Image 1 (tube, rainbow, N blue to C red):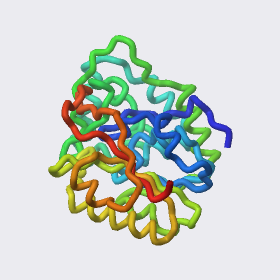
Image 2 (cartoon, rainbow, N blue to C red; image 1 turned 45 degrees about the vertical axis):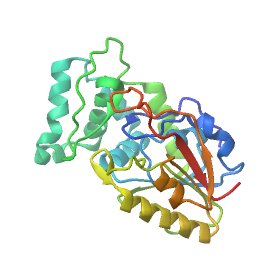
Image 3 (cartoon, rainbow, N blue to C red; image 1 turned 90 degrees about the vertical axis):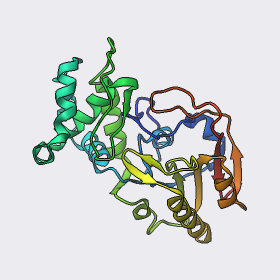
Image 4 (cartoon, rainbow, N blue to C red; image 1 turned 45 degrees about the horizontal axis):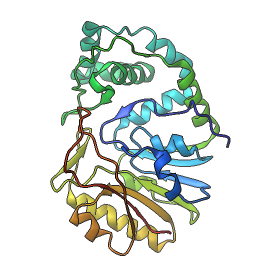
Length: 274
């Protein structure tokens, strides 16, 4: 497929890819015919590669619903976004929609997707983040210039997701790993190991989960399926993936508020291919 530069991440996702995909480009396989991303997040690598066939998964059902809505109902979504003003009172009202789970469940998929995009465009640092209860908790950003309904970009993403052979999954990342062909390429971007329990948008991911993920990588390796994983250069991660190809990166990881974590372990890329 011919890549469309307008097809880019719709939202900024807490815990998402920090190194720009173009910097990772030399590390990707030269030819990717079937792509799999089990921790989708904002899909930065997906939209950089724009493969013709992809299997995508995320544990957050609202995120997957948003992608499906962009794909299937882009014009209705754009119209819904145009009705949301960049005002703090309105922002607070919309942010609190998910406090009433019963009423929130009655909203249409277009309304929920528009809410997710609207909040991510107008919240502080543009970072979509939920608490342990699954409720959006980022404060209003007070930005004067905000593009809430980016129609050209949304149409480009919709066109890509419609034209490519895309399969979406919601839930545990292992759902995306079953049935992969030998020529598939899997990119993992899990919550990074910090030496303590990690999380991504209210979902915990501790070291026992990292061990489970490494076992999944071992199984992919046994099946002859190429994988690439983003992580941090902690002793734990280095030991877990001893024997694989580990490439250090110089990129720094930002905190939720957008500031740099000084002294944090550098990012590493782990691969089972050269």
